[in-house]
Image (cartoon, rainbow, N blue to C red; front, top):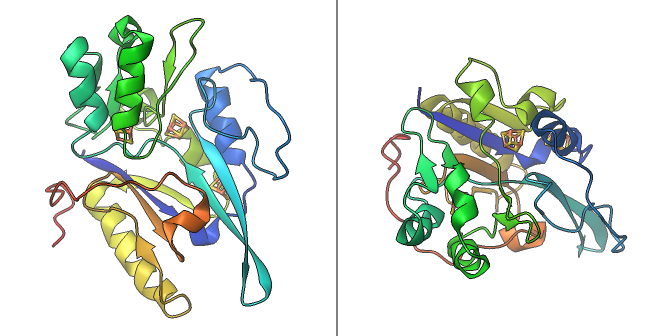
Length: 230
Ligand code: SF4
Ligand code: SF4
Ligand code: SF4
């Protein structure tokens, strides 16, 4: 039952259905936002927005190109957030061996603001967010409640374009590898981001920097044994 996502950004239309469905399933309230000159809304992940569709605009060969990136926790194979949280509150972050989901437990609220900041800084993708008033910490939990009951994560179920895929880790890697080969014919720079280290595999056609995502400065932690890739 080892699970993974495959996110094919070449199919994303930035409809934001996944972002809204995520909030709805989790019963998250609206958050304050502001116009920053882009359609990205809110401007960043926050304590009530664990999934954010990022919009980036670039001029390439004299043409305006849009890049869309449905950002979320990558459910790392060896999660640095878990390592840091364990220093202060053991069991605040756990990894479900069956699904690969990295989960924050109720104990996460025991982390102080400074300890949380240390944990956030350890995340290679700058994902966790905290509401300083309530101490609530937020990130994607793989819709663990749905997945253990045989349902798809809400963002996957909602996505109308085939961008969001979810299933057995081996099947997702096979799908990603096949799609990469197709996409490379048109976009030779296409790649699968950090696929050895994560269980949310993104296919992008340009450098990650162009997508407005936080770019991990990490050396690979090694082969993901569950994906069985060289
Ligand atoms: Fe933890 Fe960040 Fe990895 Fe998610 S992406 S498991 S928050 S280290
Ligand atoms: Fe949100 Fe669930 Fe998708 Fe995670 S898996 S981004 S919690 S809808
Ligand atoms: Fe992109 Fe699918 Fe999310 Fe729409 S629902 S923004 S197509 S990933």
